[in-house]
Amino acid sequence: MIYKEIGHTGVKISILSMGGHEYLPDGKSRGFNENFELAVRPGYIFEGFGRGRRTEVLSLAYQNGINFFDVTQDSEKEALGRNLKEFPPPYEIYIQTRPEGMVYTYDPYNAKMANYALLKAEVQRGLKLLQRDCLEFLNIAFMKSALDHDPEYLDKIKDNIGRLKKEGLIRFASADTFSGEYTYLKQIEAGCFHTVYINFNFADDGGKWTVLSRAKERGLAIISREAFMKGELFKMGEEVGLTDRTRLANIALKWNLSFEEVTTVVVGTNNPSHLKKNLEVLKDLKLTDEEKDVIEKIKTSSIYKAYEKKKTEEFFEN
Image (cartoon, rainbow, N blue to C red; front, side, top):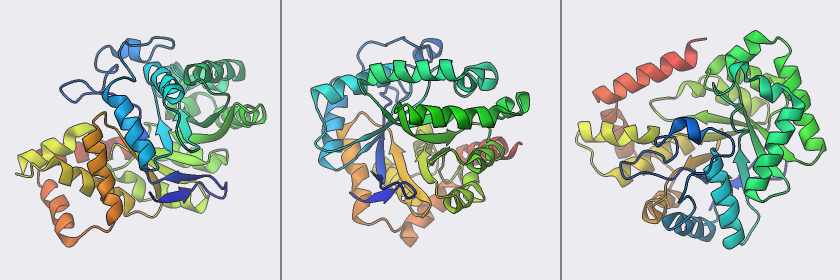
């Protein structure tokens, strides 16, 4: 495994990390695609998470030095907490999660995260699910509407992060949004975040123009997600006659890691063989000319063109 340091904290995380999603037979993520309302409801736990192949994936992650784990909905938090007790990692790991029901568009103006008592209580509730005393990375994901609604919003978030750290409930905070470049830059400028959590792939690469470089200037790590475009990458490949999914996945990972600003790429799978094949990119991270040609061929796909247009408009709409 290869590790990169988070700023100057002394904390080093693996350049490939594990997401907490588990999947349905059609490849869509569990929970969100079973009942979205329940998936983002604090306290609701779906049956069957953290069992079978998921525990095999965790074992393989340990064997290969993966030490960063991101979980979202409560079902994933509970499962990871239980699995870590059942199968303790042989080294220190770092977990990132979010305050459920407070991020993105789940709470109007993300007002609950600006209220310290509510945020603290939610962090403590999440820690119980994870069976931990301190959360390494708290994902603070708010929308531009929060900034527009409350001119003091960022100051409140900065104060809340400081208080959570002082009380020993979290170590670091991750900047995140679905509002695009404007909000990311505001978060980076706030000076209270250690990492930026961002969608990043060659069809959704708006971050490479300013966000990545600004984060690097401020010493923030980049945690990249959606390398496989929520599975759309493979549909793009099929459309242009590229059906080797393993090859496409590894090219997507190598593309991500070709940016020196990227600290880690979060990989989502509950298939041990898929993770094992993803880990093969560590043998040689350099994109070959042939692999670059594959990317260019994918870009001729009509699915790619529609996806890229939509994501670019979303990222730069503000």
